Image (cartoon, rainbow, N blue to C red; front, top):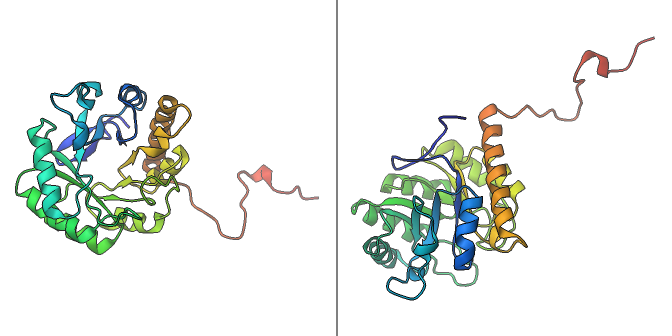
Length: 256
């Protein structure tokens, strides 16, 4: 659709594919961004090696919105410090809040995330929180000042797909913010399925980075995300339970 933009905090994007850059070599980073038609890419602040020999910022094409994440933060205060450091390094005002205390399952802490949102909103950040898909928590985050909600589809890095489908659909129906599925999406078809639910965008990293050809896989994600969005906007056809229906009068059995 010509004027179908992803709007996050008043910033408009044509692409609905957000790329996580954490698992790519520096040389591959540029290729997957370009092949995926990506307009926003995450950045772990520790990879922004300002003044060092190699800096990932040098490999991200101009015009790409940087989405620094607070990877490594265990509570709200640590997340705020990382976000402020990213801003000082020139990464802009966007931030993906990622607060994880659990080192085994790597599940986000919704309560600490909500606290961080309130603190960062007072500092004029554009805030995208990574969260467990829970309606009450999402409402709290929206009230605290989040600009989008990023529920996980499955445990981070697992490539298991949209295991939280029913909960994500609840957020789509009930939250007046862009819902962006983040973590767990392992195949382009799973990204398409999520887009058909009405989510605003998909973030992927591991599924692309662990493919035999990451550049081509990024292009595949781009295409299926666009297809899923078009399907949602078009209105999916109804589903009949326990019966069929002829597609035309001539499809049925002939009468003698």
